[in-house]
Image (cartoon, rainbow, N blue to C red; front, side, top):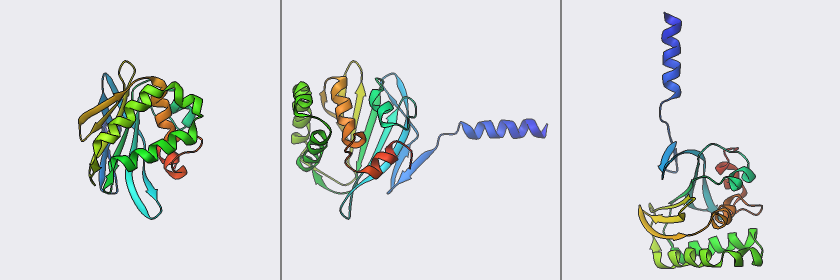
Length: 188
């Protein structure tokens, strides 16, 4: 009887929802996107010089520890950015554009010209972002990458290729920050 009770207790602990907290940001282990339940793959802080800019969290259909596996995954995914300081949408966009350029050739970027333009327009219109703002970049196959600011849809960039290019900012061969890449992959 004691063994059965211990087994039930251990099994129930394995199914309890957990939350991760980093830099005062609470991140759920699971989120729902479209028709998919996604799991927190990894979370880390994007820093520049001595400043922490945002907490980034990557959600996937199943955990993956390889950048190639994440980039090849055609399923729904979410990249969430929790701002730790005030920043303009223009400055954030500038950093994203550098990430695109660092991980793609000019010709590769030209193939995604419309999606890139849509993405740029979204961030041009955001104006000044505040500490505590949440940017969600949600990818769904039939929709594209939707960008939401504090839960409000700001725009969509079409295509799976664009979402892969976007993720390469953090997971590509020349990521925004190597330590953050490893954390998003859950290997550090």
